[in-house]
Image (cartoon, rainbow, N blue to C red; front, side, top):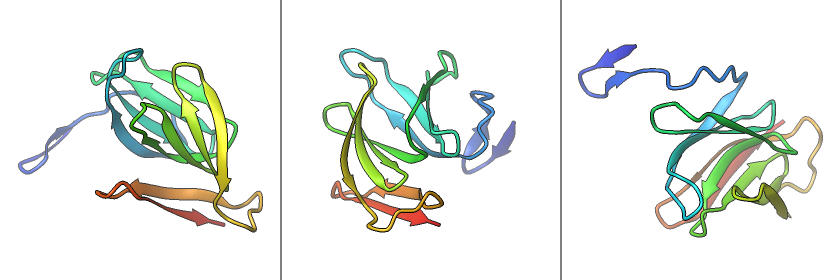
Amino acid sequence: MTSSPCLGTARRLVASGCELAEGPGWTPATKALPARVRWLNILAGELHHAAADGSDHVITQLARRTSYAAVTQDGDYLLVAQGMLSRFTPETGAVEDIMPFEAETTPATRSNDARVDRHGSLWLIAVN
């Protein structure tokens, strides 16, 4: 564990073995699912969830390398993935492609980072 007077104590919740973990966030509780922490293993195309104490670690395999999962008002996720924005429904595992975000996507191109600003706009970047 690491401690800081400003940030408190940091500790690992889950030994997930991710090669490239990004996009951590908090997912609020829905009618069907409890509140949980989420992150993505970009290179493996995995969405990880765990309870706040690190228990109940669940891995969902995605079809693309995905770097960010923005929670929607419906409790679904807007996935920022390899050249495509998709909607993911956690209760069913269904993925619906919404739109490509880069006209000349190659296999080497992938999303790298994204954030939702205070106005609800999604900002993303891709790398090649």
